[in-house]
Image (tube, rainbow, N blue to C red; front, side, top):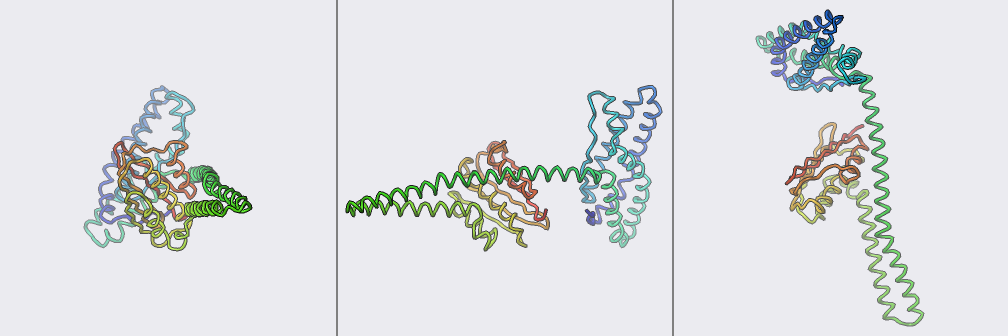
Length: 371
């Protein structure tokens, strides 16, 4: 993914201030590395090399943070080789055979001479504003791409991580669908099905009373059957609304969530800003997360009010549900919040919960609009 154009003033500061840091890192890491290599035959070189690689990792971690702060470039931590066993020798062998170690060492070697060029560009940018406005940000963007290629995970590691993520997402999606199927079956069995059985029994008894010419009893039984039929229809309507409410398809999230929160027993503030309208799976997942979270809030949190905020940028729909309850919520395996996380994972979304003791509780879902 290409690096975006960084802010001009931060880029100039990055170009000017990076040189002394890179000089110190270059000298310290290179000298320590050379001493370690020269003394490897005496065994003392192994701990020296471990110190050198530790210094190198610390510097590269600083470089990632520095680039994120100044150039707004996010560089992921590379996937590192794990030691085959305990002990200093196993750690040294793992680092020696780790491709990330050598890529970071290569970056240290080129960072200092590159820093000299960037320092000159930064000084020129301060003296010549047009150069700083038009050229410096491009230099910062190129540095971000270079640092990402050396300090971030390689392409193979990224593909492996993405494959594992999709595998986990698929498994959690299957579990979420299975749990939803069981919920629908349970609601049908315990609700509408029982109501319809009661309707059939009432009508059967009414038929017997009709044969006995007892109009008062027939009228009572038909009335009971009619009441049960209305309850069954209401329960089926609620069940269908929980799966995919028609207002969501017709009018979108704002109307659907407003309709949902209007039925809640506590006041719920709603703010929805999702233009352009996200894809249907994102809308359905958002509605489900808000609905289930508010249900949990009213049942378990002790809150007297809550708020729902749904926003969107180019790539993500962010859902935040906040309540004033007593807190202490967590994503326990098999719990309701874990089920919501599984539902979000079906579209590569992430759900997080912040719920300190005493509250407030914030449930946040980040849902991508394309996957």
